[in-house]
Length: 289
Image (tube, rainbow, N blue to C red; front, side, top):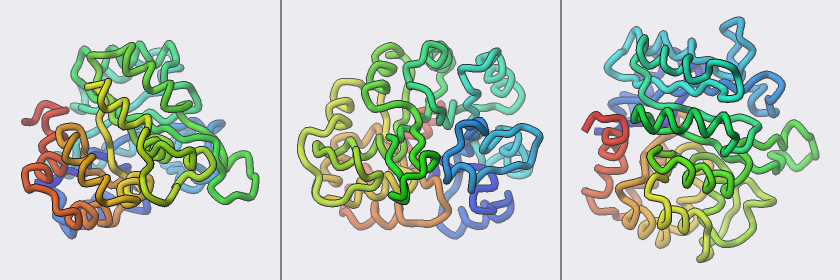
């Protein structure tokens, strides 16, 4: 079984039917479909390009856009919702979504706030009590295109130190780390401070590895080019990392291609390790195992 533990509604023009056809093409049985409710005043350049204005709410990917997928294919999609914790009634909104639509993930948390924001901590603790994993996005203010566009260099989540504080303040909550600056911390170099997609062999001493050792509530979402790029930098290191933390890494795409599967299949991993990464860990996190 394969579970894509990170994707979005109408992402790259994927309607429900197109998304299911894409999943079938790559042998994906189920998908975690996440909202991404970045408010309009926090859009970076890439968020503006991907904004789905199919509702009156001016947010990047509203939760309501997930519903057609779940309503048409309830066995293929598991819904995730991350209300902006800075807004009133965020926890009540999440409670309603859990009751009405069987939401099982709090994600994607992608806001221009530190991950240990006081209101966010309240939301995370609620998720810990209810057994919802929380998918968080960390992105340092590094331009995508190097042209100095301030909107292109928007940051999200603060930094990995803010994630560490949240992990330790919410020990009962399972966090899934994701995105460029989460994965750049796999290496002990400082390349990720100036390049969202650093290259070259992994240098010992990465903060992410330390957090995996110190914080058993931290999991890794390998999605997007960020996850692929980091895990593709040094295959020898990656095989050891995935083997050492085989119970806390999840296959995920955040896109519609197959590069993550191709990478996993190229590493010579034990079949038991691959089974956990492809589906076992995701099922355990949301109580399906």
